[in-house]
Amino acid sequence: MASSSIPFDQRDGVIWMDGKLVPWREANIHVLTHGLHYASSVFEGERVYGGKIFKLREHTERLIKSGRILGFEIPWTADQIDDACNAVVKAQKITDGYVRPIAWRGPEQMGVSAQETRIHMAVAVWEWPSYFSPEARLKGLRMMISPWARPAPNTAPVHAKASGLYMICTIAKHAAEAAGYDDAFMLDYRGQIAEGTGCNVFLVVDGELHTPTPDCFLDGITRQVVMELARKRGIKVVERAIWPKELEAADEVFITGTAAEVTPVSQIGNYRFTPGKITKLLMHDFDVLVGRARAEASAA
Ligand code: PMP
Image 1 (cartoon, rainbow, N blue to C red):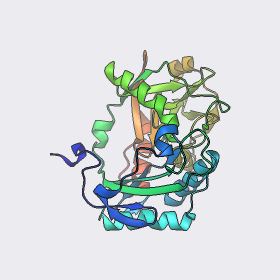
Image 2 (image 1 turned 45 degrees about the horizontal axis):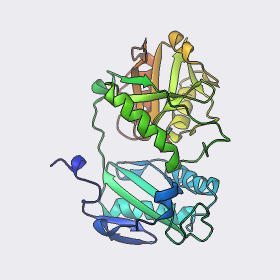
Image 3 (image 1 turned 60 degrees about the vertical axis):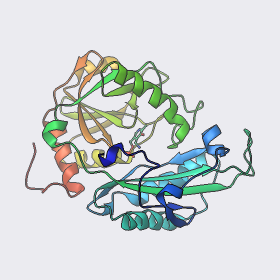
């Protein structure tokens, strides 16, 4: 059986849990855990490239911030969380992989009020090589415009990477997959372009990079990295409110994220795009940054 199809509770190795490395299959929680019932849980998704976690401190800081937005303090410092992540990568002997830190309210109290709960934390790491060659990725993703909207900042904790926010992502993604698409493309509560179910989005318009202002969704770490790469290439980056009808004027569209990296989009609803020069350039620059490509081998 390919390792990707082994259920996640039936793998071997170790998981860091509340300060200790425990056998993978024993990293369990009780069914009356607050985080499970009330989504009082925050997490991160990180990549290991060549044995090193990319932007580890930025992810750790976002995890701590996400917990604070939900009203809890993770009982570990940023240094301790970084150390925990690195310790699991080392113990699992991972060269190219995925890191999943998660913090949640425990089973000490059951009900909406959760003042007495303890905050627990775990870090799991698994192998996750880059499956797609640049050629395969250049085919581009097909995205369906979802009827589910990213909520307003006074409706949900939109700047936290909080588990509860993924409820509509899974519903939207399943609907997209059932209709033969790769992912759902989500607008926000105003009808403006927001993001994918696990990624941010960029449009290339007249040689400039346009991306929605992240005022009701995650300001992705990859998003920030890619904006910086674009500026280094002299490409103008514009953050603004973008309406879906503006997709008509986009020459290229791509998504960014820890999992997606930089991936071209070939279709959003009835709009079609061909991955072009700027997308290829940024895919290349990203690959160089994470150590997967050499700077001189330009993909543009
Ligand atoms: N939006 C959502 C909803 C996500 O889940 C992610 C992935 N964490 C992103 C955007 C991109 O964030 P990052 O680049 O930090 O992975």
